[in-house]
Amino acid sequence: MSMGTGLADEGREFEAKIEQALKDFRSSVHAWSEAEYSRPRAVKLVHLRSWRVAAGWALGCVLAAGSLTGGLYERHHQQELAKIAARQQKLAAEQRASKEQDDLLAKVDSDVSRQVPSAMEPLAQLMAEDEAR
Amino acid sequence: MKAAAEEFSSVVEAHRPQIFRFLLASTRDVDLAETLTQECFLKAHRNWDRFRGDSSALTWLMRIAINLEKDHWRNRRLQFWRRTQTNAVELDEASDWLPSGERSVEQQMMAREQVAQVWQAVEGLSARQRTVFLLRYVEDQELREIAQATGLSEGTVKAHLSRALVKVRAELRGKR
Image 1 (cartoon, one colour):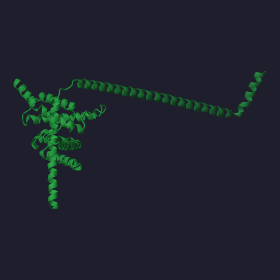
Image 2 (cartoon, rainbow over the protein chains, first blue to last red; image 1 turned 60 degrees about the vertical axis):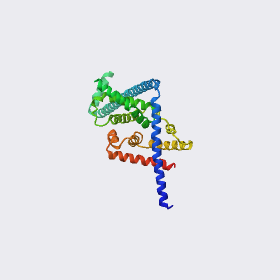
Image 3 (tube, chains in turn orange, yellow; image 1 turned 90 degrees about the horizontal axis):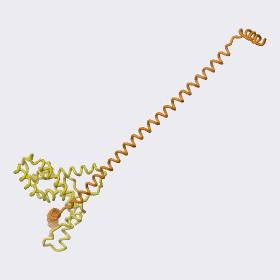
Image 4 (cartoon, rainbow over the protein chains, first blue to last red; image 1 turned 30 degrees about the vertical axis):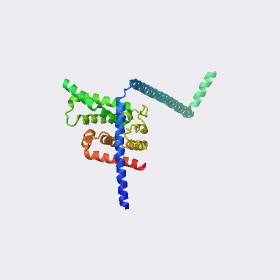
């Protein structure tokens, strides 16, 4: 027997195997389906599924409510923090402004006191003597 | 009105087992196949007056069943909180259903193993390839009928079928 004939035989054998496997697969699915089709179905599964659906919805609602509440709380918290920060900034700005004002007034006082004319000094002494008398 | 109801009744009686079988082979889940079969006939009943007879009633029903199955898996993907495991039977269990015929025990075992290998190959097919393969090799449908049921062209059906067969061959060749 030549090598080519051997390969051809092997190929034919494999094709026959495929064909048989597909036929058996078909018969197997038909047999399984017929057996399951004629078997009475249990109603319990429907209840089980309804229960699962209800539980799924309940869990979904709880998660949604939790997310919403968490989100709202976080938003409120952020707003409060922003308010506190704004108040602190305002206070700091006021304190800074007040300090600047005080510094300015002190500077003005010192400048004014330095600018008192020496020509007024005798008058000031006279007033002081009058008061002493 | 009564005639239409009777006609629909006879369609249900004639084709219900085939629709159930196709859905069972597609899902390997008995409860799911039963539920989808019921949904299929409910939908068919609602739209029965719109059925114009362009294709056979079975092809029309098969198209509804294919779309329902597709919708089911799409919804399932969206419902990520539901358990991911299905009630699908194991591949070995699915291949148990083989009529013994007049075979020896050894031949039966070999046939069972080959059926399991075909199931294994079917498991690895894309949804479209699987649908086309099952319609051809389990439901014995012609390419034209498969094209009508799936909404694909005959050329596309042929291509899907060819790719599916390549995978089945590879599975059977690999474990020879």
